[in-house]
View 1: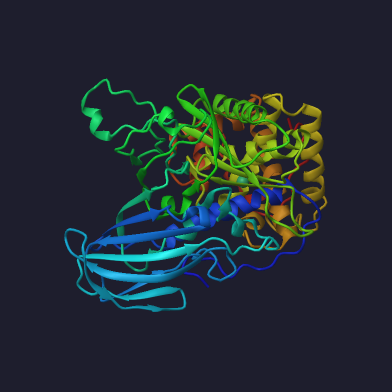
View 2 (view 1 turned 135 degrees about the vertical axis):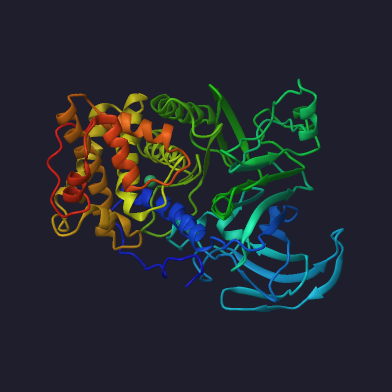
Amino acid sequence: MSHRGGGPLRKRPAPQGPSLVRLVRVAVLTALLAVTCAVALRPHPVHPLKVTYEVDLAGAARGELVITMVCDGELPGVLNLALPPGEFGDARSGVHARDPQAHALGADGRQLRPLKVRETVNGWQLRAGGNPHTGIVYTLDLRAMPGSEQDVRRHISTPVAGGVRAAGFEIFLEPLGVPVEDLTVVLRNPNDMPVLVPWPAVVRNGLHLARDDAHDGDAPRVGDASLGYGQGFQPSARAITPAELGRSAAAAPVPANLFYHPRDMADLNNALLVCGDIRTHASQAGDCVIQLATDRDWLFTDDEALDLVRRIARTEMGFFGSAPTDQITVLLSANAITGKDRFDVYGVHTGSSVLVMLDPDTTWGTVEDQAASVIAHEMFHGWLGEAVRQTDPTMLWFTEGATTWYAARMLTAAGVWLPGHARGVLGARLDRDYVNNALRGRMSVAEAAAEVAAPAEQVRFGYAGGVTACMALDEMLADKGGHARPLDGILRRLYAEDRGQPLTRERLQSAVLQSTGVDCGPWLDAHVYGKTALPPIKSML
Ligand SMILES: [Zn+2]
């Protein structure tokens, strides 16, 4: 049992076949666990610590990261540090932390004296009393993930060509029971390795201008990094030009040192760091950079993939009126999962960036047919799930249901899917997982969707029920108000007005009321939070 909440993960029954709902579930689980952990770790407001994590990429090509965690602020006599992989609390993850060393540091950062570190159930314990500055160094080995492990969350942190891909929630040691108010992540990149940090900050282009340049007003902002809302980012002091890189324009940027400031522990955990042989291709849409990154060659071209990503991103941005962040990155990587229960495509989102894992022999047809819906779904979460924050499990029916439904509509609007194909895919899924599910009428949709580690049948019911509920809510509101697709305006209103806020039932009902004049509370009570079956859907698309 980890400190990050959630019980031990049960082995779920084998799936009946690739289902988008199931693919999508892994992404939700990841996001949800990150959120759960943020809530669990919310500090009580006494003497907050400033914590800096220095990630040394010198050994990344060998699948190794060395992290120095520097705590500024008085520590308790005994400090408990939760060890990655805190997310799962067991040793089956591919990430293994070892060789902890701790020192009391002087004001100038010099090591004054060693501190005792001992192993505990969750990680390490430090005798730290009274030090104003403390440094803890540890090594992470990412090489140990067997491909037979079916849980995609255990495959996020892994070696990739020439480097590693690492999830924040698996690499950053966390102080327990001590409030942290100021977080900084520093990447040390002595070998000038291409680096992407899609979330919360991404580095793009080759030019990194010191923040000091900001005082001379016309310093170009080329190469500045993405900022999530309220997040700081300080580019490297060392400017590197594409010519210096000696790489093609498609090579990923090479910051010598990069640092960024996660807003909170949730942001820290949400970071996805990738370094190695990465190619990137970018396209601008308004103020947003749409970026494709990959670490391998495929049976299709990078241009084809970028074009698909751009069409989806532009359609979703057009729907909401703006992008949730100033960059959207889709990272295509190989699916390393083996075994008969694996899927062809896995998708995970971190912020508005999307990691898609595909079989190396995936054809372009399969990308358009299957990967596109994963990309559209995960990207849509940049608006609904991240900008409008998904934190309350009893709202998962809406966050996931609406995202799945709108992903199909976005693909149709973008011309990636024909309407008949989208109707066929959605209709078959809803019939199988909701209409003909034995749980229909016996369990509420909200309850089924809220329990992320439930048996597969319940998860399918909750998700397909969520899609059906969103469609039925839309039709109910259309009947009362006389306007088609009222849910479109409700989603835009949530994004415009509740951005950065956790989505709650109250906020949804309020957005519905303001947008349509309808109090949907009783309807939700019956059909979503109650067991009354949803009415048949008249028009899916
Ligand atoms: Zn989802």
